[in-house]
Length: 276
Ligand code: G1P
Image (cartoon, rainbow, N blue to C red; front, side, top):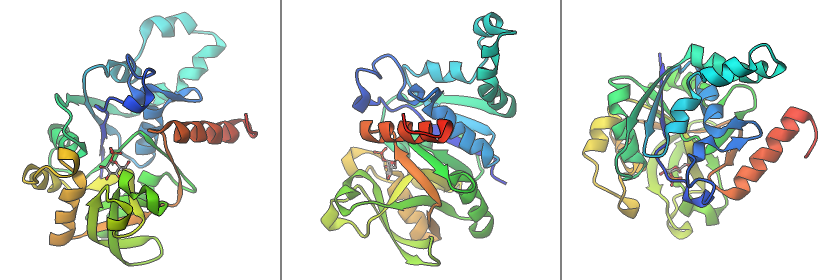
């Protein structure tokens, strides 16, 4: 089954400058936990414990986060604060972490292709940590892994967005299989509302079959001069099958200030039972 999960984390996070000048955007905390840790927890819940990061310059804090910090841990040993590291220690025990660098940013498709060396010839998950997802019953990635057992092809998570927002997402068209499932017939990266095939937007959770790498390798650059995973997935859809899944849960766009604040308020309420 699927054991590997790729986290493309090389992006600059310019929407959060100056906060992200010297700190990776993935380390920005929602309450007391970095965004990327929520993503890794979701992967582990889905049984994906081989974690691969496609990283870049200025991202070393991510490696340090998924490692022990001897001095700090020695300092707080035997105090009440030790417990605050339980969650991250569990992750470190359960997972292996591998890293490769994307030297230049050429889009999400390029980042995923760079991850080939970490993934090899296996189906794998992709998590964009900016999209913080909470499943209603199980996590979103776990829902998708279950579907993979049934369909054995690439799966993208989708959500309905307001028509005017399509230009921020990959957007699909598909034949409905059930309420939540579509067989993809078309896919367009960041279309203007008038060109969008629907308002079903791809969010940052994917299960990909490994043939995606050869397809990416042969895909010309697309929207904004970048190699787009959307273009490669469209080829997979046309030559085989790609499933779009309207996931059961909530997703926050933590790549935007508004989404980040919304996620923070949501998590505060979940944790402390009231609004801040
Ligand atoms: C990327 C993908 C896009 C997808 C989005 C989900 O865009 O290219 O198709 O809808 O992630 O978050 P980005 O947000 O990296 O510009």
